[in-house]
Amino acid sequence: QVQLVESGGGLVQPGGSLRLSCATSGHIFRINAMGWYRQAPGKERELVGMITAGEITNYAESAKGRFTISRDYNKKMSYLQMNSLKPEDTAVYYCNARIDTRSGPLDYKRESDYWGQGTQVTVSS
Image (cartoon, rainbow, N blue to C red; front, top):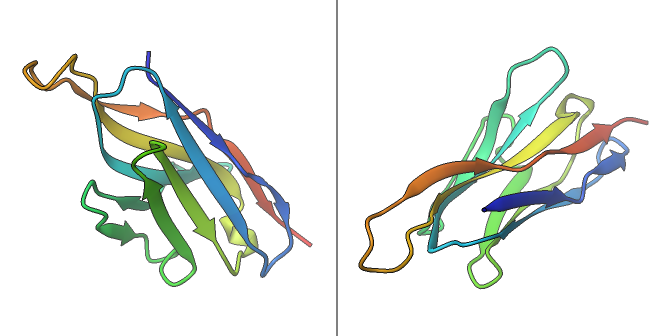
């Protein structure tokens, strides 16, 4: 059973920084793209940014220049560094990963999207 667990959320003042982490566990053959999403109260979940297996990153306009996504292949983790935080960044942040859970290299690809439970980020003075 694959699990994703986010950590690092909390309360921060406007202009501050937070670093979110996403840890994966379970049987994982390969992690492909990893992404971060957020959902503010009364709004739909939206993409913050993503990083491919080849470490190509893509960000929402609201995140460009302020947020940075990275990943650690050995630890099977992803990170979201958030700087210059604004009150409108307040949301529950979710980690997402497209994971191949095949049993081995000769097995067929078994790829699915997995989600964490979310971590609250509140930006307020």
